[in-house]
Length: 517
Image (cartoon, rainbow, N blue to C red; front, side, top):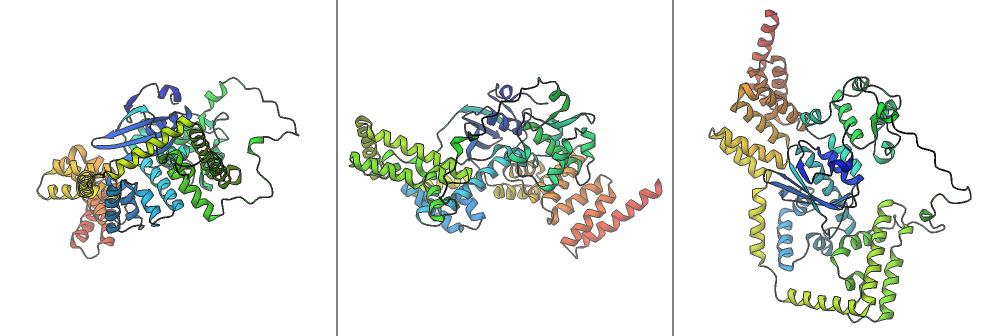
């Protein structure tokens, strides 16, 4: 149903309008590409870094996606603390995350979990960028990589993409027979499925038609279509005819019963796992987040005067502190394995005389540069303020409101659209749709009403969204929908005569239209 991952990546650039983001993410994962994916939507930019197919970082020029701003939104920092820390970062040329851990504002483990959630949020928001331009570039070094599960990102992101984009990329004929793909990954193992979603997986084992699946009880057709699109992109579900046409694979011979299935994955016996030890998990997170920004001396925690015996002892102590086999969870194992490799590389670099002298010289140069003074903190803070103010959704929305008040509908539309691109809040979506209707009632009425329905779903307590929806529905002659929307607005803003009059007018118009039939 979709191009092979290798074919998807033959083009080095394109538009998400023709290559959906879900397909692009999956293709990079399957091909295990180490690359950079640049995304642009008007003035919005994101840069995703991949290591062997796994997204590990995402740079963004959106204010609400910055580390400091997101911590303020989560209640981890006050706005005053954020500004003070940013000024200190600029003055000391330090990373904000490192400074947060150093000042014990956050533990290393809490910082890692926040960065992991923030990375997923930044990537998932791209599913709204249905017309963004994309470009593949070479891999870049990431100081603190945060690994995420691509399959879960695709499955969750498809559930958030606009309905018109879903229909554009996934419109299988009702008679098409689908089945679980025996050659694809297991949906139950790769995805965290609810009991309701497992019913859909069970249904697919019986090779149903698309029409049958869209009519499943307990699901809306839109829910089913989104899940089928995601599962198909991930190669978990395929047309039954396509599966049957493949040549049969011979069953692999079983290993002898006496041999372990995977000797490398054998766990040490008699020792407790380290996952439950808080001090060890904090150490693991701190080491993992910072090891790529350190030179070999700091990786092993040794001075530049270290001798051969002390160097060896430091290396062995580092390896003994975080052995991969002592972690039960895969996430902990992968972090510990990465650190083990880093320790080995650092030990190798300092064990050879010429390499030792080179790193020693680099350390001296870096310290001299630091002592000579960094950038002006006030200037750095001002530059950040100018840059982020341009990309703040709230400031764009306020500008849109000002232009709407003066009757500049096109100008208001531009700023509301920009605010929704940055952060698609329900209130922003409502004003965008309402302004679109005011600018072109005949040409954009139906689209505006659909967008207002989406705004009411995103923010069901937004009084303005329901009032706008009622007004637009009235303008389109959809009096039943208008009456229901006026009633909902009246509940959210009781006592307003405008809503009471709207209910009466809509009810009378609906009754009159029934009489004319």
